[in-house]
Each structure stands twice: as C-alpha cells, then as structure tokens.
Length: 337
Image (cartoon, rainbow, N blue to C red):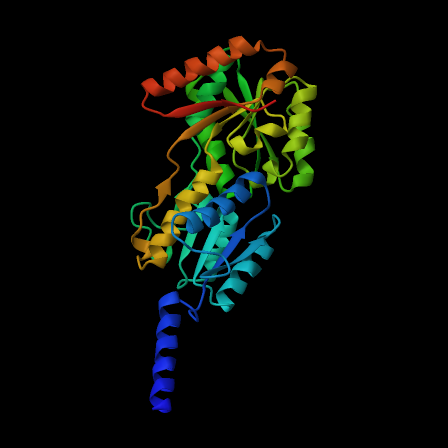
C-alpha cells in the first residue's frame, strides 16, 4: 500500500512539474548590436519588453538573453556571431547592418531576425523583401530620405547645399547618401559629402563643411551617431541647422529629426521573433518596414539658431498637413525643455 502511495505521489509531482513548466529548457536568444547608442539600445529594449509583455517570455524563467555589443568593430561582431553559433542559441537578433551581416555570415541554420537595417537586399542579408528565404527575416528602418530632404527645403526654401556626414564603410549609409543625392537634385539642392572611418574622424569632417552648406544631415549612420555631440557642437557654433533621421538623438543638440521611434521598431521586431519561436519559418516571413513617422524638434536649438519658435512650429504643422495630404502619417512633438 505504501509503495502504491509513493508511486502515485511521484506521478502527481511529475505531472505538476510538467503543467507548471518546471524543468523545461529556457529559450536562449543572442542579441548582437554593432555599437551602443540610444537608437540601437531602444531597439534592443523594445524587443525584450514586447516579448515579455505581449508574448509572456520572462527573462530568467522561460527565456535567456545573451546581449553583446561589438563596440563599432566588425571583427568583434563576427566573433560574437560565431560565439552564438557555437553555443547553439535558439535565435539571433541582430541590430544594425554590420551586426546583421556578421550573424547571417555565421549561420545558415539558426534563425536570424535583423532590425534597424536600411537595405537588407543590398546588404546581402536576404534575396527578396517578400520572400527572404533561408533562415533570415527582419524589420528595415529604410529612412524616408526624400521626405527628410523635402523637409529641409520646406523649412529653409533658400537652402542650396546640404552636408551629409557618413561612414562609407557602412552599406546602409552609402544607400542613404545615394538616395539623398537623388532627392536633393529633384528639389534644386546639392549634397556635399563628408565621410569618416571612425568616430575620431567625425569632428574634423563636420568642421570641413562649415561655410559650404546651408544645413547638415545625419541619417542612421552608426559611426557618426556615436559621436553626434561633436557634430552638434560644430553646428551650434556656426549656426548651421542639424537635421537627423533618428528622433532619439535630437537632445544632443540637433534642430529636429524626422524618422522612426526605435523602441517601437524593436517591439515590431519582437513580433517576428515570436512568430519564429512559435514555429514559422523565417524565410517565409516578408521583411517589414517601420509604420509611422515622428517629427521631433528641439526648442533650445530653435532659439540658438535665432529662429522664431511660434513661426517655426507653424511651419512644422504645415509640413505635417502636407504629408497628410500625401497619405503619410507624421506625429509632431517638441523635446521637453
């Protein structure tokens, strides 16, 4: 009788452990970003938060994250990706183009979900946006370069030359620069390029544009964004409007940014991660794009440039109405002073 009770108790305990999910192996996700800066950090946080809040993946309980930054170094990104492969993580989230290239080159088997990648086809990540194929899919942050150049002309009708700071070694930045050239040509403006290789080059590159341009533009270039404070200082000292594609970095001294909310971008990326964890093949999931635009301006910089804030805000509202008429949804916010 005692044996029967003991066996019954063991069976009951095993059943309880199974129902509660105890003893199950945790899902392991490797997250690699090319460098630490606000936009990419927001993507990472958005992924983790959405997987917890929407899909119930609780860190330490049913999921583990190995979060790594390559600190702007491509060989380090390759090493991180190879580490994830050797550790047999269940999925890799790669943030920004270079980190995504490292992840895709490291494995053909582990699912890779990229985020904050401008042109995944040109970067060699996928063969098609509609049918990525293989083990890869993700969310592109293809910036609305034509809208951004149009905004510069809308606010400063006399602008003729726009400086573009970027790292020519970043595929996404080369694509963006080409798009900016094309958009400016249609608006009667010209792009003047200033390229960098490392963050140490950014200050000198910014200074090289002084006296030659009516505005300076910085897209989602990881190298330049990582040293954006030096660009903002040059612009402020010389009363040059600084336009960005990343709203999360406006506080560093830019006039404004027209782009995406990268935290929401990360949450959108989490939707794809969850679909793959639930059994879908990444190669059959179309690449997605960020859905809404955000226009964030800096009142302090408006004042520094000697612009009338009321008149400037009126122009921004007029731009939003213009975009609305074109079927583009844009929200307007002022950076808290």
